Length: 179
Image: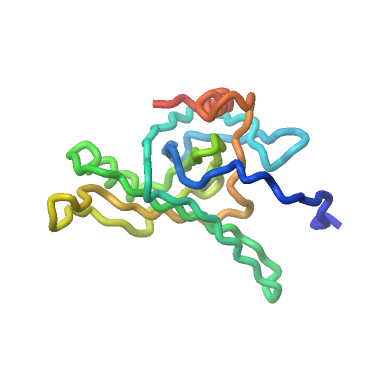
């Protein structure tokens, strides 16, 4: 049967950390096809097209979560991908980009603090489903943007792993141009 498991798992070492280091926005449609590793279909080997990946460094409050939505009654499983970003500082340039991100449905590369890179919204893209443009009431309050991106995919976000040297080289080796 195609859904039988073939691998166990031991308790891993306590050598990983949480958090997101950066996200890279790719305009939907710039990836024309995806190739997967021949021995591990959960790993993206490369992309075809002209995908520019626009890098946003993030620290602190940004999170990525995948919610598995499975129904025995319907015989379906889907993966809800949720990226919550906090972007500090309001600028006129960012204001325009936030508007464009809200109108579009980008594919998003997510680089975590362990050097892993995932492609969220690979097939259907990610939609902005909420957010704020905020400047707090006190001098030390946040001035910036919060954005929630949500996507629904048939499979979990795939790893992008080529050489394993570092996240940036893996992204570039897979066929993305980092801008």
